Every structure is written in C-alpha cells, then in structure tokens.
Length: 280
Image (cartoon, rainbow, N blue to C red; front, top):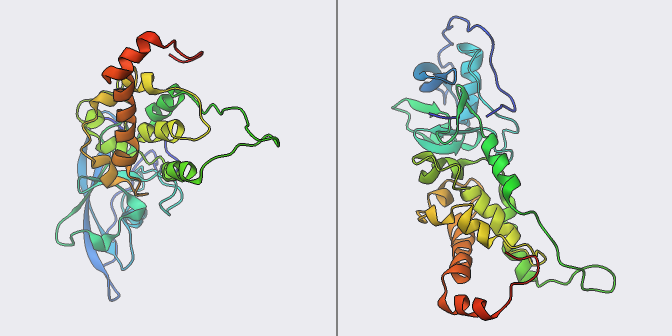
C-alpha cells in the first residue's frame, strides 16, 4: 500500500510504553476504540488504542490525544485543523475524509474507528503518504495563457457568466481525496497515464477561463488519460469543498475531446481548414 512529506508529522525515535488514559469523568464522554495503521513505509499493521471521546471532538482530536497518551511516535500530517489546508487526509472506516472535518458523533460508537493512510500514494510512516506525484503532474499541464487586452485601458472585457463558471474550481484545497478514491489510481495504479480528478478540475479551470488561449485538449486525450474516467462520480462524493467534479469539470472536458477528435464533421473540416498558429 503506497503513501507524502508531512506539514506536521509527529514522531520520535523510540515509542514510549503505552500509558492508560483516565476514564470518562464528565457527562458526554465515552471510551472510544481506534484501530490505527502503523507502518514504517515498507509494511505495517493496525494497532488498537483506547482514549476518551468527548462532545465536539473530531477524528484529528482523537489522534492527537492518542499521541499524547500512548503513541508519541505516531506520525500524521495536519496543519490548519479547519478544513482548508487539505493536509489531514486519511481513510476513516474505509472512506477518504479529512480527519479535522470528521466528527466523532457521526461515526458508530459501538465499533472501533479505523484510521489508515490514503491508499493511492506511497506510504512514508503511519498516516503520512507521499503525494509529491501530484505536484509533478500539475507542472505538466499548460499554464494560463491570456489573450491580449481588448480595452483601451489595457484590461479585458468578460461576461459575468463565463467568470462565474470557473469560480467553483478555485475552491479546491488539494487534499487529494478525489485522487485517492479514484479507482484508476487506487486500484489500477495508472499514475503514469492518468492525471486524476484533481487535475481535470485544474485543467477545466484553465480551459473554461474566458481569457485563456492555450489548448490542452490534445494532452487530455493523449497524455492525461481522460478516457480512463468512467464517470462513477466517486470523486465528487468525497470532495470536502463540494465541487461538482464529474458534471462540471470532467464531462465538459470529455465533450471537448470528442468534439475535437471524434466528431465526423470536425474531422472533415480539419482536412480543409489549416491549423491555427501555435495550436497542435
């Protein structure tokens, strides 16, 4: 199972012996059992921990409490604890989620809560995975290339509807949960051929920008593997920012690929129409 460098990774060279934590002492608390994946990057296993769960706690609170009480060498990544940095991505009871946004009162209290690292990326230690592949992918996508200003003052004129269309995509916090849940990466390991939902969102934000002039359609078909996506919408379901990844980003990009390469009228016109300068 594969997993990145941590924003805040908690680890010490030698684990201290487990120390029992005090039992619940106030109303609204309970004892919670957690099965957490422990690994050195080459192999691992689930280890069971018990700690006090109190009202309002999220999973990240419980992990921090376990670090303080019984597992000081447990590594996990986190930063803002507000659902905006995307650092604390993990799989909770088998579902890709942000630990800081998953409330304990939303999880079953009568069974252990399992916490493990994202499966689509190489493991480093415990809950920390190596997501650097994502940043290399982003560099492969043609950057924003604006058209020349069309107003006398050197600015541009745009329709508000065109501006609004791409704003949704800018909410992405790069938690990579959509990448983790995607079966093309998670199960089939097509990392060299497929850029994943996060970067289709990025490509859509550029392709649909009213000022952009770069052409990424050929790359989407030939280099970025958009044909592998079978629009199961699992990426949309796990997005903590509720971006409509499948319907608003991936499907429109697929339509552009079809129009460019598979529409018979377009293919006929291409025979008689020269390619624009600088376009593939």
